[in-house]
Image (tube, rainbow, N blue to C red; front, side, top):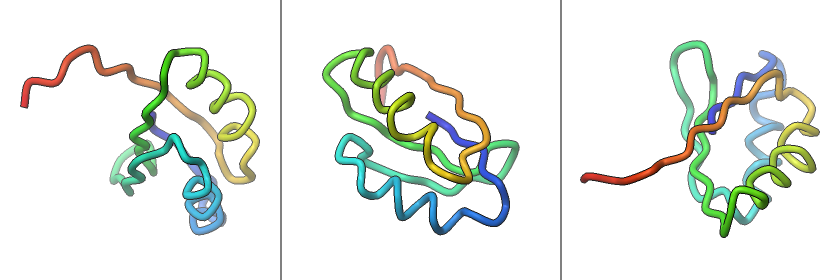
Length: 74
């Protein structure tokens, strides 16, 4: 998942994201999105619940985009 943030809330957003157990990695990006999250979840419903009930409610999160890994090659 990638997240676009408002400029003034980066530290607060990262602090809040660190509290979510399903988020295994948080990376700072250059480009149109600011953060990339690696999320481990049992199914797509869990990811949806995380997005709707937690991530989207964090002050400073402006936009998100979710990508599902189908297969890792390396």
